[in-house]
Length: 322
Image (tube, rainbow, N blue to C red; front, side, top):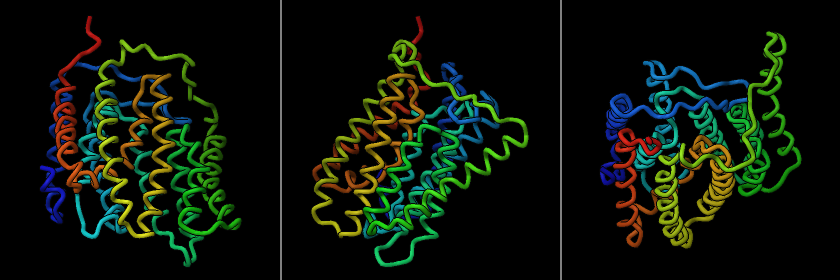
C-alpha cells in the first residue's frame, strides 16, 4: 500500500474514501467507547454523537484535510517529484486521535492550520508578502477560535515568517492585524446576538485518570516510534537539501515542537488526544522522508503497518472494562 502512494499516481487518492469507510464501519461495529464531554472551542461544544452526520462530517473533514495537506507538500518542492503518501499517513493516524462518531471542532482547526501553513510556504525572500502574511494570520486565527490553546502559536507564526524572510515590523503588524480580524467579527456577532459567554473549561491541574484512557497509550507509543524513525531520516536528508527546503523544514520543526509539547501537556492533564492530533500534520512530512530512506525505510514501514493494524483493532478493544 505504501509503495502505491509513494509513486506519482493521482488515482490512488480514490482509495482514501474506501479506507475511511472501513474506519466508519469498524467504529459502528466495534465496542462503545467513552464519549468526550469536553469543550474544545471558545464557544463551541462537541455534539452530534453516533449519528449519520457525525460520521459523515468527520469522514469528510479527514479526507479534505488529507488532500489539502498533500497538495501543500507537492506544491512547495519538499520532494523532486509528486507523492501521495502524505494523505495516506494522515488518514491512517487521525482516526486514532480524533473520534469519528462525535463531531467536534478539532478537524476544522486542522483544516485552517494546514491552510495557514500553505500560505506561509508561499513566502519568498525578495517578493512582496504582505497579502500572504495577512491571509495566514486570518487562517490561524480561525483555527484558534475552534481550539483556543492554539493561541500559543501566534509567536510561532511570527518566528516562522522570520525564518523564511528578513524581519520587518510592518509585516509583523500586518500578521497581527490578520489574526485580529476574525476575533473582532466573531466577538461582535456573539455580543450582538447576546451569546457572549464562555463555555470553555480549563483542565484540572493534575494527571488524568489513566484507567479511563488506557486505549490512548498505545496510540502515543506508536506516534513516538514513528517520530523517532522520522527524525533519523530527516537529519540525513537535511545534509543534501536546498536552502529553501532547509528553511521550510525548520519552519515545520518549530511548529512541530510547540504542537508536540502542547499535545503532551494537554494529554497529561486531560487525557485527551485532540491537541496531540495537530502534531500529526508535520509528522506526515517527516515520515515521508523515512519511507524514502534506505536506512529508515524498513522500520518506518513496519511501524506504519503496526499503526494501520491498531487503527482498526482499537475499535474492538475496551481497555477500561472491569
